[in-house]
Length: 397
View 1: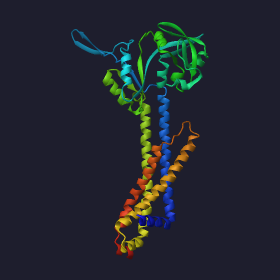
View 2: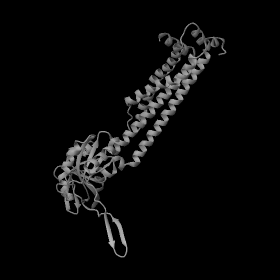
View 3: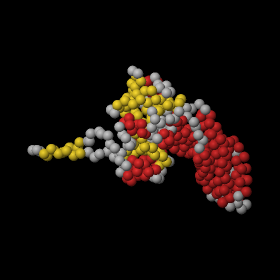
View 4: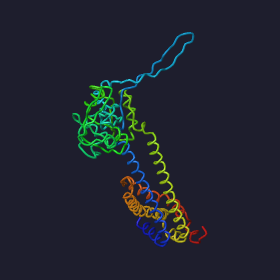
């Protein structure tokens, strides 16, 4: 092994120009792998964080009533399916379902919520809003409005409410200001305890967040909820967990994947693009290493023949060229990972999202670089090991 490593290093030093060029190619290839992978991974995390940070990952609600079949018997038998009229459906046994869902594998948080349309007004200004009521500690695990407060406090007890900055600007609201919320049950006066800026227009312009009991009174749902919002451990398992909940409870469970098909398609397209870029980059690296080692075998036919003639085994010759590929892979991995990480960190200072360097990407790039070096060296190494000593010395084998 020591002799093979010594010969491999000596061959690389003798062809110094070739070695430097291929090492530069490997370094750039690994750096591109790390750079592209880090950017796409960080962008996907940012998109998911922005999207799922303002909505539940699974929404569980009572099942829709089945459509009725209407028959009209006369001279001709007619049949049609009539969808039921929209109506307020109670969520029977929601407390029991909360306990069931909290013990479901993969579910990390459950928040019973009341949501209903209303008209918010102050003076002559009016705005259609969605009244959202929930226990503040539970709601924070689904939508963390506390971290998005622009001013005020995260408090919804009594007549206190949180409003978005867009709604506050439109109605001229400030901390402590009263405003009316009107539904078919009549008007209710609330006071602004906090103003948040979530970055989502649907929340900032249209949500009035209050306690569960207050929202139940405003919407005419005493002791009832409209849905159960869930957060899961793995966001990409949300659809599987939703299907399991439907089968287990008979309730309707809609995952974020179903509600955001366009976003999911975009994420999948990014993954495919990233994979193709990585594959082509590593193919280019492999072809560069293989071409240099093939030339090295041709140039050193006489030396290989002499080694074989004085007793060097085919295994030793094979090891020499495999070690050259491994050296390219290891050194290229170290330099490439460092260069790619530096570029990613530098770009992160000017992008609108943070670029994270995941250990899995850095380790994966290093392992792929080493594997690429070994695989690309395999064919030249086998060719060198199979040379006939006498023919190689004469230069005609």
